[in-house]
Image 1 (cartoon, rainbow, N blue to C red):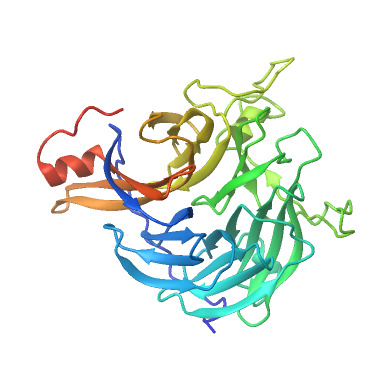
Image 2 (image 1 turned 90 degrees about the horizontal axis):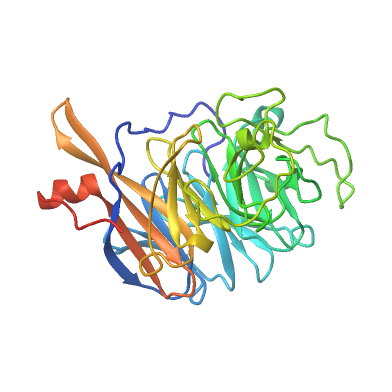
Length: 368
């Protein structure tokens, strides 16, 4: 077993500029039915379905270590410190967990019949002080059940049910109609994609269990749901839905809001995946619009890249930060983005303009 929840060193977060001038395709790697990619401790991990493997890879897609033996893996994530990786196997509706360093097995838990399916997972330790000895909370996006489940994890007992983050039976920002990709931001808040085509949001949650929320859920348990929280300072009182979400939501004073797909910058058509870079910026796989959109940590739209040819139907992505420059003052951070597009047996790699210039000493080709 790994160590318990004592004092932990904070993870290093690089600060600087990331891809302010866009991304260019750098490489395409063939792989068997890639399901999900994620960057954990600045290292790439890829989950593939046909061969039932989670693979730790280098930047050239070389294999570093492997966990295998899954029958129908659909989602994975790591704990807050990047020490434990959780993998959902739909075949037996179980979560398997592994040491992130070498992908050796630690254990597993069956979550049937409560969890029907899982398309994304994330962790956050916010509120974990209510469970002494526990490591983190694990969240599972279950569109079949119409909820985002919460489980508490400790190194000795594994996973135990701990209510919900969100349900699908309401219209406020606290509800998620069709949960998809999820990730934890640098403040421990959860960003959850709502792929309902009448909403097309990424909602920000404080996942801390709300012990005042005692309306029984469908399993007669206290939901203890999380609360939608602001990306930035609210513009009205009470804050409008737009203050809790990325995407087109009702603004202050707006009546008769009607949701739906949008191709406008900062808005979505089925947001499917979400990732962060080292500066805390938010990358969203805007599946229906065949593009990636990037937002500041406070939710302000910054830029986009992609095309029907290069990024058709993106479903999962991860950003790897890369230090460029030398000395103490001439330092910048480039990035690579690894991306899965729908229906392709490949993982695509994109390079930031900063990193391209550093490597090639020349401007990149025209961004698309």
